[in-house]
Length: 173
Image 1 (tube, rainbow, N blue to C red):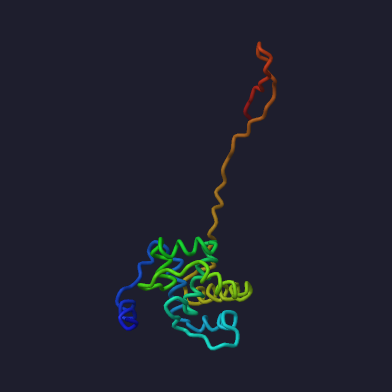
Image 2 (image 1 turned 135 degrees about the vertical axis):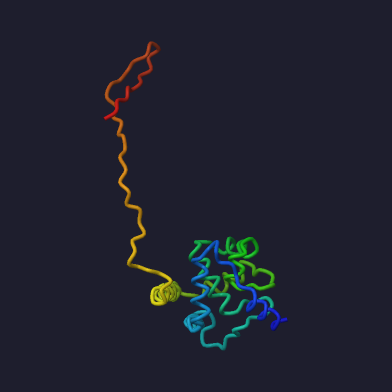
């Protein structure tokens, strides 16, 4: 079964057109698998880690990808669990293949072991690689600086109605 899944992944390319950001990150992680070694100590300490995972345990690669997906999307663990079954982009990015999505407790157990500094360091490293390989161009300003005129309305005069309610008459500048 493992060989078949590897062949499926090699011949069927994921469609990242709906979310190119994760496509770029996926490509960087595929080309630079040494990034996963940064997380090994946080996830397993000094123990030898199974890179393949087994039926109910995610691999180091899946844990790292889930942590990155969770961080970028701003999800909590329950939202991450739901996204695995609801979002094809999430399932493809985490590399679930044909597996059942992992429960939130499983990801919470492993992702919570990753220090915030390690995750931040890896995200910065991914951005550096994206810049070096031309995926990202930081020389462009991506900011809307359109000047807009607003009409400001000042309240100037009170108007008293016959039943005693006071309203303010607005005049524009």
